[in-house]
Image (cartoon, rainbow, N blue to C red; front, side):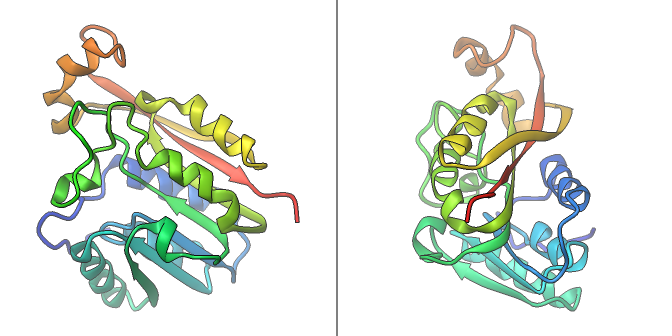
Length: 219
């Protein structure tokens, strides 16, 4: 899928494609409502509208440039997406959805999470969980009964913690997709720090991407 991107907007990569494939394989009933958290260019939101059979798609991001890109990409593909600007925990309120899709920032690093600039799309603090943790906490409240959540992130930021936190919130949770990829430029540049932090083995230059599925079964 060729996408328009404003300067500084995250380019869809292997994690985006893995999340879209997991959505396509999830046997999601058509006609429901879908939410794309941290939409970036809108690639996942557009796929949800075209492939996921959603009747209504909402996309949220803290970057105005990302939302402009998502709007352009939705119009180019004749899809309609509701766009919300701001922190997802603040702008969504008490709304609930049948499906929640998320490709949040998850790259571990020694720098504080930025408040502006393109690095907001990947920087996620020393454990890589600055966005994952609040997302796991809020997800049970975002899902309708029988709702499905799909979150993609790297094994570098503790997949077991994601599964445990979702289960603690009352959801069924399990890994449904995996894929090993070579490090991109950001991870290659900080490989020595990742080694010193014990997040990778000496000489390791690959990561495993995973998609965690969460199901809300209780009413």
